[in-house]
Structure formats: C-alpha cells, structure tokens
Length: 80
Length: 267
Image 1 (cartoon, one colour):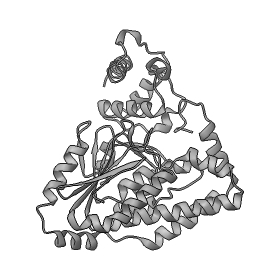
Image 2: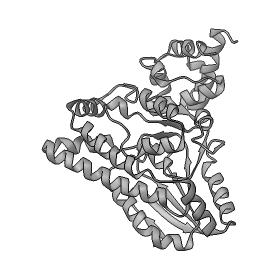
Image 3: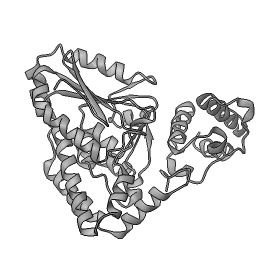
C-alpha cells in the first residue's frame, strides 16, 4: 500500500496532467478548485480519474467540503 | 425529414443509422426547447424507421452526455407563475417528456447511447431508454434528485428497476451518489467501456454490425425482452408532481440555482 505522501504525490501528478497545470505549482494544501481553476463538474471528472488510478470507489458525498489535495488523499487512502 | 438541425439537438440518417446529437450548452440540460425538439424527433421516427435499423444518441459537448433537467429554467419558470399554474406546467412537462422517453424506449430501431462525462438525472434517464449504453472512461452516472427533495421524473426508477436489481436501484436512488464507468459496468448498466473519446466510434461500429441482422427478427427480439413498465411510469409522474407541491423542493431548487458553492452538486 502506498504511503499517504505517495498518494498525495500521485494525485498532484494526475491533477497537473489532467488540467494542464505545471506540477511544480501544485502543493498538498492547495485548494484544488482555485489552483486548478475547475468547477464542480470538472472536479467530478478528476474524481473519476482518481478512482480509476487508485482502483477505489469514492462516493462523492465523502468529498463534501473537501477542497485540498491532502484531505483528498486521506479519503482515498482510507479505501486502499 | 432525414436531417434536422435544431437549437438543442440535431439528427441525421446515414447508412441506416439515425444519429441524434445533443448540443445545448453547457451540458445538454433538458428544458422546454429540448423537449420540443425531442418531440419533433419522436414525431419523425415512424418515417425515419422505414430506412433505418439503429439509432445512436450522443453529446457534442465536452462536459458530458447530459446533466438532466434544466433546474434553472424550471426554478425561474416557477417563480413567474402562481403555484397552481406552476404545478400544472410541471405535470404537463413530465407527461410530454414521458411520451418522448416511452416512444424512444419502444422504438423498433436498436438504440444506443454513446456517453461520456456527466450522465446525471434526466441524462441517465435518456440513456436508460436506449437498448445499449456504450460509455467512455470519463462517464459518471448519478441520480441526484433526492438531494433536491425529488425522485427522478423522466422514467428513471421504473426503467432502472426493469434493467437492474432492486438493491442496486435503492443504492443509487437513496444515496444519490455518483459512480464511475467501472461500477456502471459491474452492475450491468453499461454494455461496453471504451477509451476516452471513443464512445461514438464504437457505437457506430456496433450499429453497423446490427445492420447485418434481419430487421424483423431484431424488432421481435426487442419487443420480447424489453417490456415498457407503463403503470409504474404513470405512477412516477404522480409521485413527482406531489413532491413538487412541497415547499421543501422549491427551497432546494432556490438553494441550488443561487448557490455560489464550488460544489453545488454535493449539497
């Protein structure tokens, strides 16, 4: 099982690639809505990609109020 | 009319395949204009069916297949009317969209929904009337209506119950959670999962294959295996209209429409 740091790093890599943001500009405590410039529908597309990458099912209500990469990684980590 | 180009949908009949494109910004929300153009489609079907064997419905917009009913149009429409007139309008809209969905469901053509991205609410209900769903890996499905104090109103529950197990229906309906294409294929909703951007191409390939079969046999097979749950569909309209009469629904719609939250889909 990956460490939480590895999970955060993988999320940042995926988010940077999906939304074409330089990887070095993203850090774990960033608000991903603001930093990636995405709306709720685009956030769902990120969720889909993360579920497929980590092979987990993450109900979207678990992401209610979650907007930073680190907490997102915690939610995913809890299902690995 | 072998081709039509409207404000929200277009269609073209090519090589026996009727391709219906959804193209209303931002994500093909179904409002009055969409309803009227869908009604034109189902009115044209009897003639189109004479020279077609398959129908494909797909979206031209990147966010997804269809985000469902146009809640903003619905809410603002309700604000402009007396409550009684608004409820009568809602019932009329649901009866008309049910006619469209039922006609597509019973259509003798083999129907394929080629979906990607957002397939929510009425969008999922539109996909559910099709015989096959081909989905790319970005597809995400959801019945979010309970979040608004409603149930799906375009025939979703009876059709989901017809096609899948009741426990699956309860999970999707009662939690209102969205789920990805892997889950959708696991539960039997999606017949083929394809790479991002490939759903329409694969649907076209499937439709071409279907053209090799005896048409009448395909029509009989569909009629035999796909009963339309008319009684439950009629009950659904009554339940939905009763729910719309509750103040909680209008309050939930107001909250959704006026929300500046980054996650209005996650109330």
